[in-house]
Image (cartoon, rainbow, N blue to C red; front, top):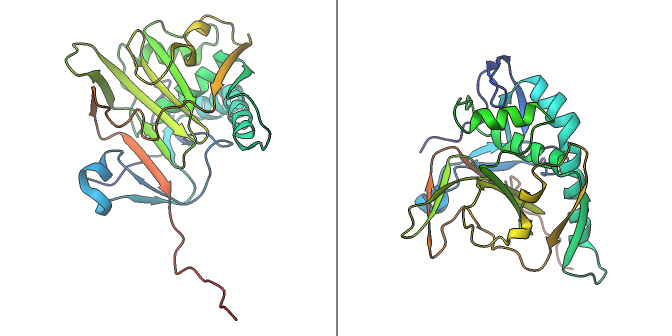
Length: 274
């Protein structure tokens, strides 16, 4: 299996809008959410397939893809949409770390349309030279570029509390139940304290209650607010949903990313006992 490719040519086609020109580096998840520390990056299934000797690529400052034009990266995601996602991340982090006794289900007031566009934009940024014009790419492009458009009816964005280390990103994933003829795309972005999954609308997604989706907010205005629940106690297991469950099948391609903190070089020094 070749090493994970995150840096493509300096000029190419933007993964979001499809324009050809200079490309910029996108932090996925964005700055203000994921820790920017040395990490080991590999394809998600590599540890299962190859064990502890699987190949990985070392990156020095978090997971980054040179895949977006400056307008999409800085002017749209960075300036307009990411601040709402980062605000939610900061709120959930504070709730997760509080020493106070609080109810397990907390409600956050957010601007769903800005948050959804941020998540979808960074999901699209995964991979190098991955703008593929088609029935999915075009609606997502139009949704991100036009703040007046509703979230596409054919898609559903799920979220959950993710109290674990590491970063998981997938794009070339599909999921189905054993014995079922229905399949769904599965794009994932996970990093403490939140996980997001983009799936086909109407797919029966085990592990995520219906109230933990953005479906009912798909037609809100760009600055309309809504309260959304976050369950700090009942949440999916660590490797949900990128690993198959007892009744599901995962079909994956090479454009999926698993990142874990890279241990420091050298040996750990311990104080001498006296």
